[in-house]
Image (cartoon, rainbow over all chains, first blue to last red; front, side, top):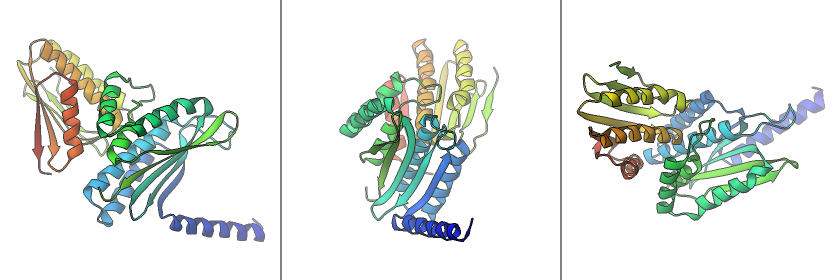
Length: 191
Length: 126
């Protein structure tokens, strides 16, 4: 790196750091999500929450949500795009903290032809109350089959049930074939 | 009959399936990397056990955490037990939950709704 590049890079690191602080991001990761990564992140977050004397109830919910979100990426992130950009099972994973609670955000690439189905599924989950979610979970468990990737279609329902909050999601177009799928799950502190 | 004894880890449960000593128990945390592979020997064992089941089987679940992928496999185990129950064997499920853990208690209630087997909820202090 020549001098200008070094300066640019250092400024980028500093801005990145400041913006993480401003958004109270306690964990951010980009890359392949493996089982080992899932275990490392959940135990790291657990020990941080324990240090902050977070209630057991909140700790348990954050743990649940993190596991399901990480597994969603590892099982469903699509593999395509150019070699240096997108890979299977990769995505961005973020945990942030605010006064009201914790927010777990995931982002991964999906094929555009899956957007309709995913939107329908998430809208349906968001339209249901506690009882409705319970019924949906039971039905899905009975009738749903484990896909070869080990997903049972239960993750989103479980997140909605455990948090009691709506799932916030967006699709940002990348190109004609793919989009970036962002999902934020919030765990409130005062429930 | 072969005894299954699996020592739990931070992502897999303790499992004991011992026909001669009447111990049937799954406890701990369940979020294995590959749920299907992890639970396959358990389901196979239950198939064999069904052929020569004890007159009474008390099956205990004492889980503190399981992920959604495991929840489906837990139902598969319960459905095998339900089948034995339908074939005239006495089966009792004991679902243990930490006393302050409403989610785990509710999970037990849901399974009890889905399968038709005697189901007992037992709370305990961690």
